[in-house]
Amino acid sequence: MISAPDRRKTVMLINEAREAGARLEPACRVVGICSRTYQRWTCEHEIKTDGRPTAKRPEPSNKLTKKEIEQVLSVCHDPRYGSLPPGQIVPKLADQGVFIASESSFYRILHKAGEQNHRGRSRAPKKHTPPQGFCATGPNQVWSWDITWLPSQIRGMYFYLYMIMDVYSRMIVGWEIQPTESAELGANLVHKAVLAQGCILNPPVLHADNGGPQKGFTMRAKLDALGVTKSYSRPRVSNDNPYSESLFRTCKYRPDYPGTPFPSIDAARKWVAGFVHWYNHEHLHSAIQYVTPVARHTGKDHEILERRKSVYSSARCRNPKRWSRDTRNWNPIGPVWLNPPREATGQNCPENGYRMTG
Image (tube, rainbow, N blue to C red; front, side, top):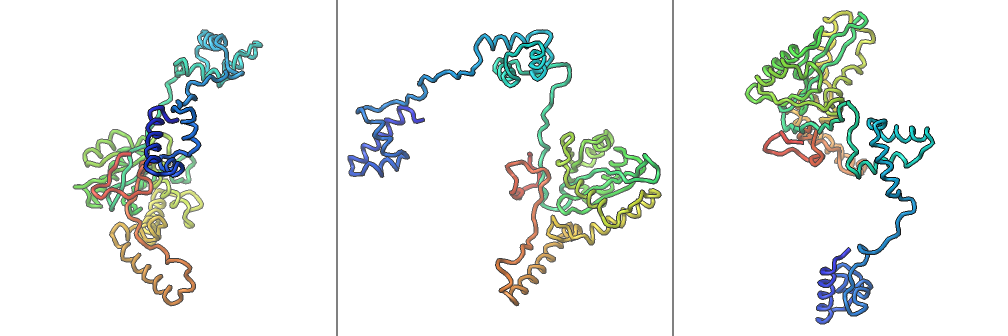
């Protein structure tokens, strides 16, 4: 709707244009209205105001009366129904042969009256904001870690695989198998990984879920001592830690993964050591343009991808008719996000740092 002052201004501009020799149709098109609208506004030699805001409209025939609304509030204020939601109140009234309004009408009336609040003694639902997003532009900037169970031959007994992954290169930078899971064992593994990667002076972000070992006092104290930035998933949201979850799936769905439980912790360590070597040095990871995690971690992926690009270009030159479009994209994937904020989806990381708040 166009206000009366804007209508008068629009009509004045059109009239000035017509006095200068312009025709009505083009003048109206410039200001964004049609000539019929201009004629309707000026049909009685004065600019009409928009009557829609003040128009009288008939009341809906199915609208609740004021008495019914007061009856709904009175029922909700009754001590018998004080702790019940409308989904419980309406059926109870129906069992008594009474129907005032539907559940949705109850909710609408309570909301309008400012009484749609949490009822009962239980804690009100808490809204968890997404975790902070981090963007890795190189190795040893953002790590992700988690713990998974490996079955043993004793029912109810498991071995615990601790594994830390570099989000940028997907390389496993630290792992251990322990008979128990604890914050102390996890803290020791993080300390060893930081020393092994030589990033003690520039510690990474470490992302984890909300398990006890991940958020235990010993682990938090160790991360603070190392200067590692802590990052955690939301409760019961596995998608906030996708890299570790994907790594464990790759591990447990390997063709050579044992079909029977591990006979001992040493057997489990031997198999996982072979898996880690294969994963880091032989596995062509689809998310990093089919290069090994070690190649990307050490920066050799650029050379490998350039050679592939050259091979594809040579093949196209030898037989161009087999290529209906450009050759396959073998460019490096660049920066990697962990839990990117919505406005940063599909965008590159800032060049002056790798941490951004989500």
